[in-house]
Length: 619
Image 1 (cartoon, one colour):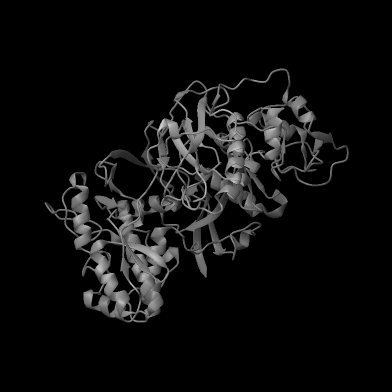
Image 2 (image 1 turned 90 degrees about the vertical axis):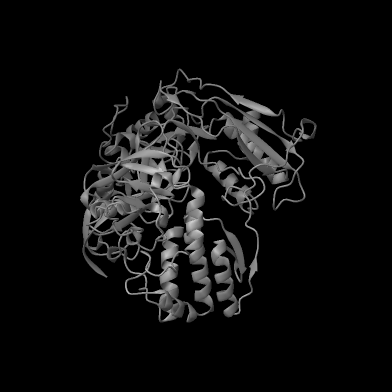
């Protein structure tokens, strides 16, 4: 498929599965390296364009972002949008977080808000794209539909994202030649909201008589949620909600009233609602549903349930052939009739409940863990290591190369036979010296390695930017706190034959030290004490012992920006996942999870912590 043009936005995947956009300047920088082809070396140093991103390098071969000081890897992607949308005009929409700084919305959300703004709508309801918020353009505020809490939003102008023309490559991978760097629609998004839209369209299209069109390229589709905007209310008229029901001012709608309206007006079946395609009515919709085959009926039932989950409506699971999917109580009967007509078994059950904590446990029932000394451990402020310069530290891990190969240094992108191209602080080594890391054998300018070390934690360790091999003992920047651990007489789902190890982390707010992002500035500590759970099995105890090593090395937490709330200068998890849900797994942070223990062992190994580490700690 050919497009006249498209804008390219480079994005990274956070730990909650949301794609976050790089700034226009950073996207231009990455795109320039991509267009340069293999001669550019295949890596992008983000600190060259944004000093705040100094620790980050993008490896275009694997499409991963690597953080040099922590070893964290995150996927990146090259995404494409319509030139007439927000990124093609340099428009950025942001919301104000608790400390007064501004956080940009995800690109799809920003595009949806901008589309409504350009249409001069007085407000836009983001429920249809999975967010329980209303943006009020008259007050430039964001309103939480459930809590009624308000935040300021703003619209600002920035650089326009890079533009490409031509044909989209089959795979968004490197290298990509300039001639083929263009862009029709990006591949279908896998978020629940996009799955909803695609599921309904695919189901009706496959049925043969449905009024909806098959999935189209993003270029030809209005931004998600924009097609569901209600018509502009006239003077004195009340706005419509996402189901077409008249309601009062957004700021005063009780959550119960919203639920009543939603349950009385099923989404997607109300004749004449904004979500209905032009020229359709209830009768046509029923004909389309009646012609659906067994598979498409299941798709539609699941799709209907997803839109109701997004709107915050109470749900009842309906057990079908492939498990259970939640649907609105008012739709449960309709869904049951449709499924019965198709010959599907139907069983209405109660919705599962979130169980974060175990039943109450008395002090006498709490026991120490066999084979693990003590029941708590504290960390204090980091003690700076004195007496060794970065050059002296790296000397232990390097062998000088007198005749370097004619290859690129993947840190500065210059040839190893030429001087280093790094332009940061000036290390006290010659820029043309080249060294080879002793264990993995990768070769770099020594000048670049010293600069990379200075940008990191300066703890006497080094991590190879190519293969991530760790030299020395890696430590982190976790603030002072306490870690408690003990046995409780309850079993986790999936582990009925053993008790449970409970870990309690406590970190108070404080002042950032010299190793933190903003020395001298206060930091917050939300959600503490945090309770986490492991099965009291052989592998569970092994994980606990390694977590104790990670705690002592200050690698469990860090100070940064929360990807959940957008708050900066706060305590955040540091890439070692914990299970914080005791008796269920509705959030994805609970049990049963057959692969969790193996996954967390791999995450700890990426931080340089293995069974050998416990022996090192004893020594």
